[in-house]
Length: 153
Image (tube, rainbow, N blue to C red; front, side, top):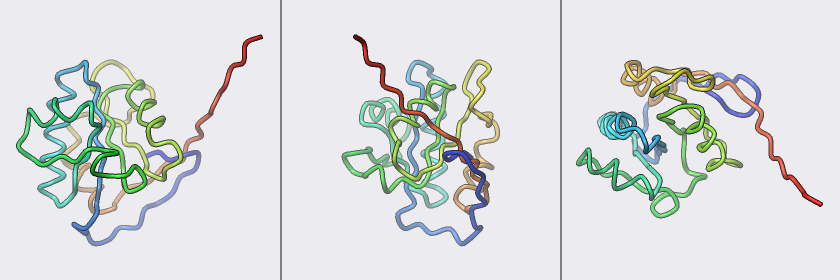
């Protein structure tokens, strides 16, 4: 798991069903990502987590599941997200980093297609990983992000 630059061990503990909010960010151009997002929402709910998605992705994800999926910035504030599950490739992970910039939520990248450099997880490992996330049994690798501004003239 990644967070800005260093590695941190998250303490293993009891799973609490109160306010365990997880943002699911999917590559909307890949049907497999949307299908997987719905499956992740279902598994999170089954294990006591609360799935959250972007408003723009809500119709696609909820069309694949009957699970109640909250919407970021409507139902849930970004500061309340515990972890972001990115389903796509490097671009999806970078989008998640931009959306969550300034927050303390780690990003979990799931490679949904071609070779990716930032995603470390494959879809077939998701069920086990979600269980470990809810048990807080994971390590966060901190990574640095850069803000760049180009001025012309």
